[in-house]
Image (tube, rainbow, N blue to C red; front, side, top):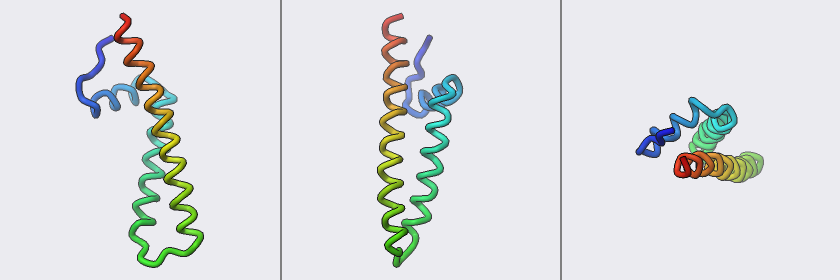
Length: 80
């Protein structure tokens, strides 16, 4: 298996071959979209502030899981 050279190409590759990675990436994109919406609120309510904090933490956890999957693919490719 050949690992794409650029990070973007590698992410695209993982999205195309790994269902779990694809689901995590989609969820990550949804969180990012909602965070962008919340960042445009000039005077966020307490609930919106809490939601933003929770989404940032969830997004970070997803990123960690995605990185773990990517690392497995890189390790697997290096050993072949």
